[in-house]
Image 1 (tube, rainbow, N blue to C red):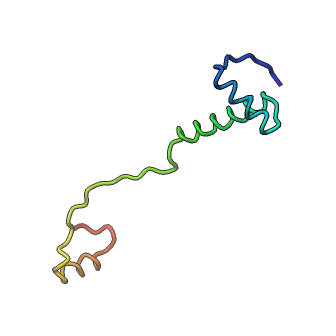
Image 2 (spheres, rainbow, N blue to C red; image 1 turned 135 degrees about the horizontal axis):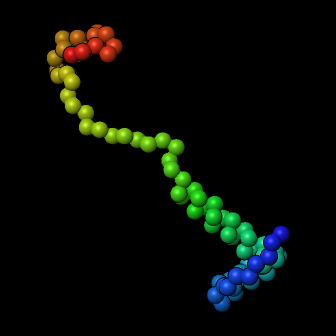
Image 3 (cartoon, rainbow, N blue to C red; image 1 turned 45 degrees about the vertical axis):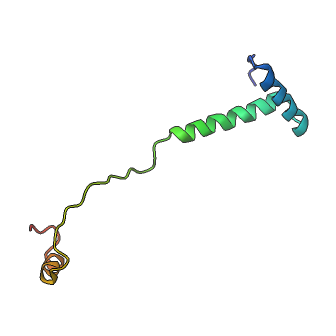
Length: 82
C-alpha cells in the first residue's frame, strides 16, 4: 500500500488518537476509514438524480361541470384534435 505524509491540526490528531485507542485500530486505519466515508458521501451528494421531474402549468381542457363536454373528451380517439 502506498505511503504518504499528511499535515493534521493538533485537535484533529488528538481526536484520531482517541478513536484509535477506543477502537483498537492503527491510526492509518482510522484515517483511511474516515476518508473513505467522506469521499463516498461527497460523491453521493454530487450524483445527478436518477430522474428529473418537469412541472408545467396545466390549462383547463374541459369544463368538468359540463357532463356532455367531459364525455366528448373521454370518447375522442387518442391523439385526436380538439
